Amino acid sequence: MIAIVDYGVGNLFSLRSSLAFIGVESKVTNCPDDFGMADKIILPGVGAFGDAMQKLRQSGLISVLQAQVEQGKPLLGICLGMQLLFEHSREFGSNQGLGFIKGEIHALDGALEAAGFSYKVPHMGWNPLNILNNRSPLMKYTRPGESFYYVHSFYAAECDESIVATSEYGIAVPGVVQCKNIYGTQFHPEKSGKCGLAMLKAFAEVS
Image (cartoon, rainbow, N blue to C red):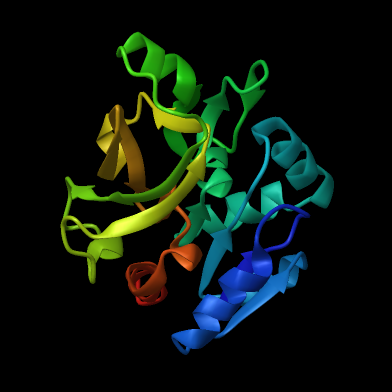
């Protein structure tokens, strides 16, 4: 069973529906005992980094997630949920993250401007993946060039050692990251059709 973290942020219904479609049992929950009984955990998220971290703190689940991660339980962060896995974010000031993965969250528009691009922000739409580490279990059913659906204005930076795959949007945006039993996707696999379902299936099969 996969426990989906319910802390008032995230597209929980479509994620649970996607898991059910591929035959994976899941439970949307904020009960600490459920995370202990689960095989894996998914941390979804939409909105602003600081607000999401505040809601996560108010939920009392940060210590629960930390304990499960330390025990080696696989955790997948999706979109903002992926960003929360990092140490800090520069979104609307300085915000501390969960610190499960080394790196920071930076503004996409600033990076694009520095690189000489005038692409629209938020980055919204389908982009192909450039796989850098095909040994990651999350890449089990993914082939180079398959596209996934992004909606974001910030991106993970200073995290080269954790990058599994990127998508080009003026700069190389980390699309998939991994640090030991911690995984993250900047895109929404639950909104990415067959390719997204295949990635969720790969996560469900992580041992």
